[in-house]
Length: 241
Image (cartoon, rainbow, N blue to C red; front, side, top):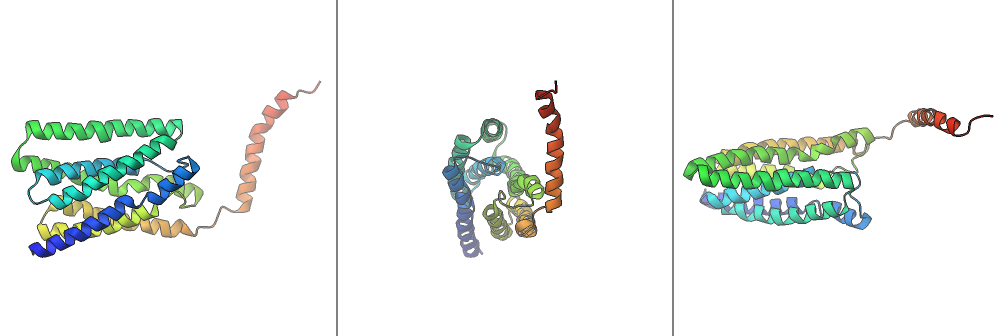
């Protein structure tokens, strides 16, 4: 059983590395266009915090070094992605992302370490941190859904990070299996939910991937409404004698 769990853990590490690297195409596009366009930073903020806390969990829990090593890699990669996002994001999104990074990635993470070190010890510390990590893991897996409003509004998956959702699905599956082998429910529950959320995101992508654009008459009506709204402004600037 120990050999099987180690083998599955190694496979999980490989898939996790691919998951962390899956947004490379998105960020290459951001760098080329020098704009974050309609992309959201929330998935990367969540992944950074999640990776940081799982790294800490892997360090303090005996035998969980595979969890620590792969998530420490995730911290490095997500730091780069967030840096690029902050460079090219418009002012409003840059401020929003900066606030989330400050509150979640710095403030929450530092608080978790201080509280766990000063107020908890032994199995209580591991259990409390595992509970927090499990909750954040679920949020991370669901974070790509933050762009669903844009997907539905535009009937387009252009700004939906499909590869991230796809590797969330694979990652949730392999780590759920690994967790069952170790009887670690802090790993099993969030990753099992992540498996389902990843599958849901892939399904949504499939629905809107080939979605037809809005009917032409709707576009014409929208344009007419916009024209009617701007007409008074034009008239007021050119009053009749």
